[in-house]
Length: 304
Image (cartoon, rainbow, N blue to C red; front, side, top):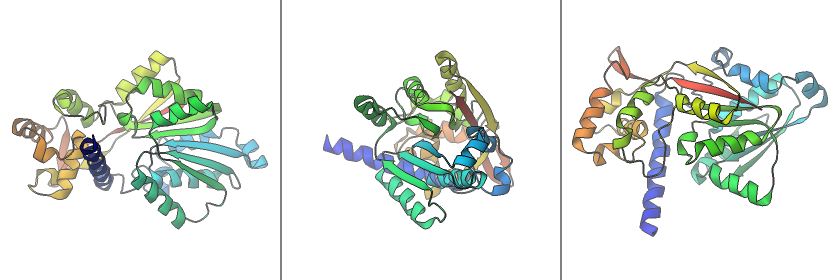
């Protein structure tokens, strides 16, 4: 049991590292993959979401009310940029920002980022080292059903075992006029094609599910939950994947397949098929000597 636990932790750690390489390779910029600049932010569909969250802005500004943000899974840089935009839009607002994240390493990095960031005086941070399922069980057991004005799930639903139950639970935590923002890969992305073709042949180790926006919107429809969906075209440079022994390329292969040490553990025939397909027009485009994977994302705004 100890060996299995250690192996699982090592794999999770490597996939976290692979995620960092993914952020560095995206066309929207390192770290701020969704908010690479104030200029870009103003043109992205979900920028409007921040305004929608506070559609009763005069009340918020006048009373300087507290607003509650819940963020399952850590994306510290993105969180702080969201919070910064809210503070600019509504000076003096007080925000209670709680984070749910099972990785101690990710929480530590988030805390370091907060310590280095100025103008956070009106924001109260709290971190919970637990999965979204553990958070859900704790809330139900203790009957601490706090309402939230904004919940975001950025690239995290792949790691939830029961996605419909998770959506239903967090939807019940939304306050009046609140919104929940979900970001995950688009149903028209290369991810969708890759996972549909090879998902059954890839060892998931119970760590992730191959889910895209197409799957998620079907779940929301069945649950009767209202939402709006926006797509953002994006590419990811995966050229390093085709260079033997390239460490960044190996991490990207891990991330693409959600498989720890894919290059050394995958059957040779499976690896050859995937590496060939990744260069095909169905999955990527070739430009200026680079292989750019279709990394299009979907932004789903869930309403109360």
